[in-house]
Amino acid sequence: PLSNQLSPEKIDTSKPAIGGVGTAVNPTPKTEWSFNRTLSNSIRKNILKFLDAERDISILKGTLKPGDVIHYIFDRQSTVNVSESLYRLLPAVSPMKDRHFQRCAIVGNSGILLNSSCGRQIDGHDFVIRCNLAPVEEFAGDVGRRTSLVTMNPSVVQRAFQDLSSAAWRERFLQRLRALQGGVLWIPAFMAKGGEERVAWAVRLILQHALRVRTAFPSLRLLHAVRGYWLTNKVLIKRPTTGLLMYTMATRFCEEIHLYGFWPFPRDARGNPIKYHYYDTLTYEYTSRSSPHTMPLEFSTLRDLHSRGALRLHTGACH
Ligand code: CTP
Image 1 (cartoon, rainbow, N blue to C red):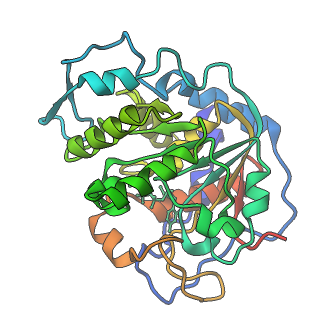
Image 2 (image 1 turned 135 degrees about the vertical axis):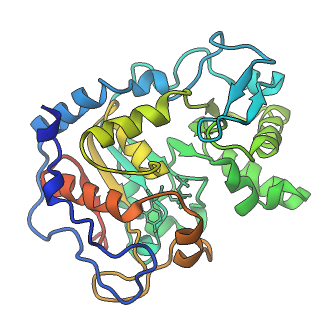
């Protein structure tokens, strides 16, 4: 049964919320980790009852047409029209069709990655997932370079690329996409209102420059399905983070899943300060006020799955 998958009683929700400066959090247990194939298979099977990531990773051409009206998932009152350009970037078949990997890395954006020297290890996986177009070149030693799939929340266009407002910012954005070398760019365009123009600018640039990226736009049912899976397992998340979405989807394509850069706490286990992101100056204070996420709860869930061998959470330095 599903309830055997996760043991919610082991999930310690008393962990400090984001912003609990000064409180040390236990790292992942130091004991030898070994992969639990049986548990991992059973999690995959159960997630499949809620979503099929091969399908739900993207809306396909033909399932809608230019001019169609879409209600945002989180802002049902607001709508957006499917533009001609966005339609052109919808894949005809799933970018993950028939793709299966032995070992995948999902790289979160926590500052815990700084000075980790995990770059080479991360790049050694068969498929590397990154979040929100996080930069890699300048941090390659700690985070690696390879990107097989990267997400792009529309807000990132503003936060990390200054709304593409100058030629220099547009070039930076293009550089980041070129570095994907044909990888998947996953754009949750229809989740929350407010990003319409940003998606439109990004889409226009991709088309104008005929960039070699495989764009994907998550299905309209993905979010609720992912949330449904975790709620059914008594993990009471408000809105899954990109990182948890990626883990949930990756179970479909990956045998062993390794997580790096997941650490939603302002201090490491020794009490040293940890940046919210490895690459910018966003703070925990900022995110705790504006974020609908429940990251510490997600983290304790992932840590529980780590301790049972379903996934591997890397929170220390790599050697
Ligand atoms: N993450 C983490 N600890 C941090 C920062 C991020 O565990 N200190 C994980 C989260 O799972 C997060 C992912 O890394 O979803 C990517 O980070 P980020 O780009 O910050 O995602 P958010 O913008 O916070 O989340 P979302 O995109 O869902 O709003």
